[in-house]
Amino acid sequence: MTGLLRRLFGGGVPPELEGALERDEHVVATAGLRGGGSLFATSYGLWVPGRDGPRRVGWHLVSKVTWGNGQLELVEAQETGTAGEAVLLTDLRPARYALERPNKLPDVVHARVNGSIRSRHRQELPGGGAWFVQRRIPGRDGVVLQVRADAGVDEQAVRRVAAEVATKIRQALDE
Image 1 (cartoon, helix red, strand yellow):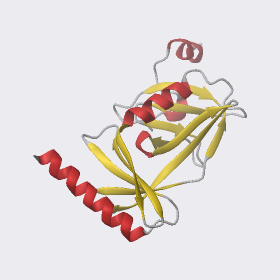
Image 2 (cartoon, rainbow, N blue to C red; image 1 turned 90 degrees about the horizontal axis):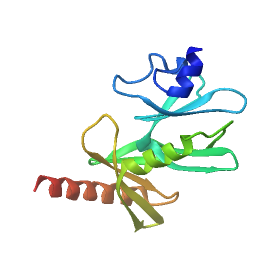
Image 3 (cartoon, rainbow, N blue to C red; image 1 turned 180 degrees about the vertical axis):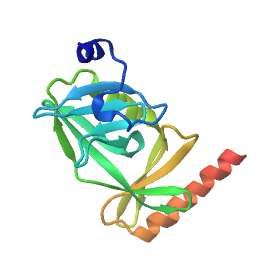
C-alpha cells in the first residue's frame, strides 16, 4: 500500500535511491523501464541504471536528450580536461531507454536540461567547430563554461580559445 500511495501522491525516496541522494536532492519524476528498472529525474540530474545500481548524470552533463517512439535517448558528456576555467567535454555514445509509460519524465528532463543552460555559442575553429555553453550546476553557486568540440578539431586551438573566453567571462563578472 505504501508504494501505491507514494506513486499516487509522490514524496519519499524510491528504494533504489535510498542513501544515494544529496541532502537537498529530491525526486521530481519517475518512469519505469520495459524489462525492469526505472529512470528518476531529480533536482540534481537523471538517475539511470548502472552496472552497480543507479547512477546520476548531472543536468550539466546531458548534451542531448530526445524522446520518441517510447524511447528516451540520452547523450551524456564526460569531462575530459580544463582550459583555464573552462571545462572540456566529450560526448559518450547515446544510451536508449524504453519507457513503459513516460509519465512526466520526458517533459521534466527537457525542462531541467534547458534550465541548466545560461548561454550557448558555436565557434568555428580549425578543423571544425565547438560549442561554448555556460551552465548552472545544481548544488553549486555560479555557472561553469563548458566547451564541446567537434571530432577532428585542433585540440590546441580549442584549449587556447576556451581559456581566453573563460578569462573574458571572469573579467566581465568582476567589473
